[in-house]
Image (cartoon, rainbow, N blue to C red; front, side, top):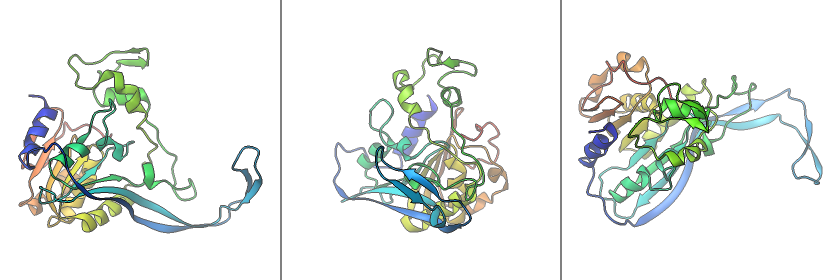
Length: 288
């Protein structure tokens, strides 16, 4: 059985049967985390915001809110699940990962809403509607952008070396990814920074305190953040699901005994494990 299929079967044991429709009590959003930063000493410049419009003198110096996270929630009128579900995305991506799939079909957000969970989908620090800050004045490094070749091979749509360009790429036999939607998937990629992990973890930890008790589901780069947030608040996270979590020393260094009462489901390309810790998972993929 393929890992993604086993994942859905395993998670189905944690959720009620999928209903054909659901009633929504509230759809909303908020920002969480972040701090105030002050910029000084930058030169003003003239900007024409609209072609043919007035030229405006812009002074970039002043106070900014930075390093915040964006969260959108859908709360059901009569949730069938005991706890809401928080969905955390991977590297170079946003919360759209969990919404509509690249081929236009409903994604995991819809699946678990129909299963009776209220759902919180977030855009991590410097992603999507969380926004990012000036660099190098506030963020100290340049952003990193994922090329389509990396996405094709990293997410194992095709083997290493299988992507030359959009007209010359080969895929794994029997792939479950809808190949005609790959270019649409490429549009989901956003800039990422490599020096914002501490701010991101702080924001996620604050989200757990605000939105939980909950079930927490995280993909790829979101995995280490989710594991750390659960370890910091094992009374708040009632179940943890890591889908191909990125490799990190956290797994070997953490005291997993603190999660004795928390079901942990780990899914990677080789297997699915329930009630286990990722301490010895050396085969986990690198950061994505």
